[in-house]
Image (cartoon, rainbow, N blue to C red; front, side):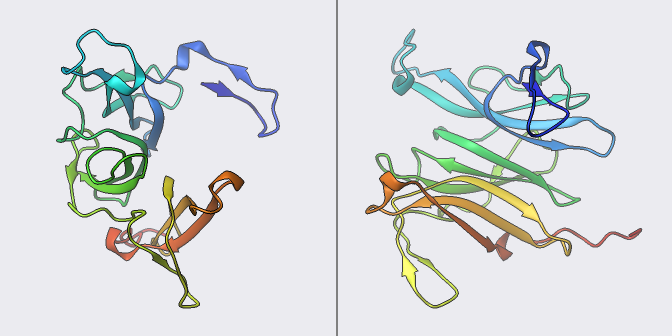
Length: 206
């Protein structure tokens, strides 16, 4: 982890603040403690002892710290991961609506085929153990996305999910996507409301 007093730097590397997972998603509580989820490479029983990337399982594990400044402690060990599945997942995005934790992540193995990717949606009561909400992929390269002008477009890859809550608590999804024709030119950023994730309850003490 690296920190800076400005987004322009200079950045200082803090080796004692390391996070025990790749592509981490974090949620900071009001008391300053942090829960997070991230991708952890786990040995695949089919390839015992292998360290090859493609022969390892990529599971989502949970971890926590007393503050954003660490130290982070892994809350699951080995194959006892946070998700009740054998899927290979990455790019978790974590948020809290005031009542439950929600996680949107990229699925590489369960719903998608080959290099194509889709998203799966999980929730959790405690931020540690997650349950699959929908067995159908939320966004996938197999289903065209419809835009506000009525046009539709099918994307080869949809990845890097991010979620923000607007001032009213509505959920806004931000995704990176590229078409088969333009995948070498970079991705487009898609921003749209997602009502299936619910909304944040109103603040009783605004």
